[in-house]
Length: 79
Length: 245
Image (cartoon, rainbow over all chains, first blue to last red; front, top):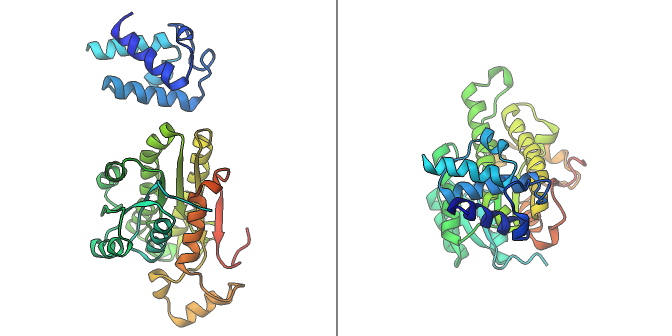
């Protein structure tokens, strides 16, 4: 697992209080991990803080699974 | 009851009559305080009177840059922010036909927009910690209207609507957002009225007197307290029965 993936999953596990084995790449934050709309905003803010990047609203809306977040942050931190 | 020990609070407009009473009451019930306002000397005098656990953070809420820095400064001074009291407000009264854009804009900027920005900043930590109290000092005028105060009434009505929406957004995180809506209170704002105006106002109050700043402060303490945990999105009217809503 890449460093980015590891950090993303750690944040998700901590914030949503879910078991690590549920936090797979295709896990949907709302449908699979029980997040509500405020949780998703909090996660985006936690990612921004952890990775020192800004996630614009339209990008945030397209992040619906754990894998989406990892791919976005992989790209954002590479550039 | 209404114990606030260990809690931290930021009060804007703390150099005014109502703000001062709110600060005193929160402090009396155990809260640490950050006092904000534009009059440094008045803030200093209040801080000296209150003693321990009081910080002074002067801020001009008409300055957007200063507004953005206020909550982080309060968090830095006190470790975190549990209670935000959006109390600061000003008036620029004029009949609408004569009202200047500047008079409208300034009142909305200070009374409403600054309050939103402070709430947005404060909510970050509150939502994370699963505790928070945001209390807006609105006004009966925001519900009932008042000639000469289209700007002020709009700002206070705006604050009530804003608080309700915020309350719905963050209720699941045990953060409550409420308003206290004073009627006519003895303060610099009402001292500016002449006797005839004042007695006309008192005539509309079933209790037969103007409110005291302490009457408003007590409502704030209640909404800030653990006992008010299940109260959110409400406006608590403190008006001697002037309007029963």
